Length: 110
Length: 116
Image 1 (spheres, helix red, strand yellow):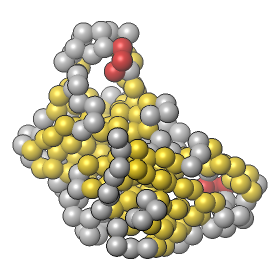
Image 2: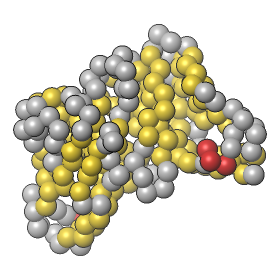
Image 3: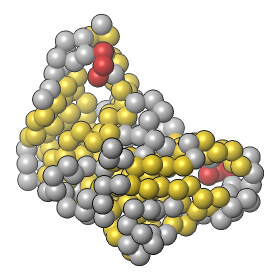
Image 4: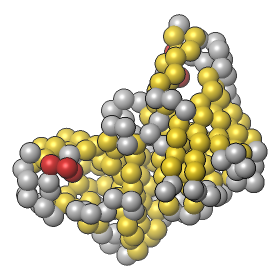
């Protein structure tokens, strides 16, 4: 069966460090992979989309990689700030069949 | 302001009493979708619609109905709610073309439903 795993439920890091979140998947061949941010009690907010033929995508302090051989995406936040604390969701996207991981809750401590 | 509007935000109802959760978007998006979010299970797709009068089942459609009579509206109907439908529900919309400027799912603020 199809499975999406985000590396851990929670990740704590110190302000200024780089946060790295992992999204692994099995039995799936997404054409795209997306990352979202979700704050408590609110809907997810779109961050980045990466295509299956792209290795890396950047947006300001965010960087996403997509390795279709390893079936893995890495999401990096550089120079992290307490305001980056949130739950981050990866989503595997093939046409309109969009499946989300359970998320990783990131806490950035001052 | 570009947004997806869901109503109500909170709803407590009794088993078997039909209810509708409304969803409206003002971005002229072709694609709309409903998700439920439960602890440890993440977001699961209930139904989606690629355009007016075109709807299809997601992963967990049982017990739900949808309709897409207008491009901007995509209501979620629970004909006979049961306690296992207690959840946080999100409506989302997007352009169909992933190369479109501003592509990305836009989610509503959520509807917290409790069925007793």
